[in-house]
Image (cartoon, rainbow, N blue to C red; front, side):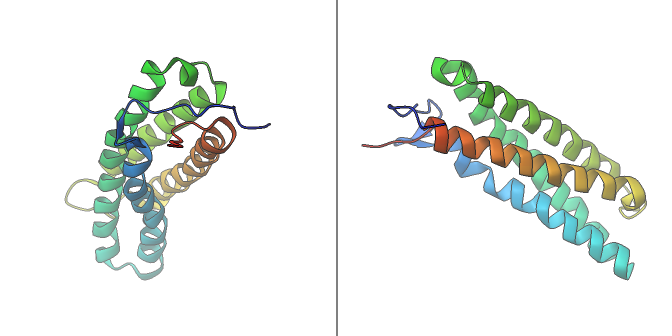
Length: 153
């Protein structure tokens, strides 16, 4: 599929730079780091890793919802984006991923953050990482195939 002839500009932008891709890096990094924190906790039993997992899950979930607001603004207010099946797929996968990440974080809150790491925390962490990969693939297609958020001036 070749890119569109004209870029599709973001409405949620600062000086022409889309806000959504600016904000998404930290939540993604936190949720991917959660895979390592869970593995470290399961291998060592050190409660540090369970506590780190609570923070990583929280930063990932809350930061992801904040970043998603900028994406939602573009999805709902830019008609060229709204017409793209890939945009709706990206949004759907992102909402599923953030819902799972939020539940994972809520499960870990409390006096014993390691209590649910095995098996449910780890299962949700790995599923979240899979959804992140799929959302990233679809987001990349939006940028590279449809020039969404590409400012050429």
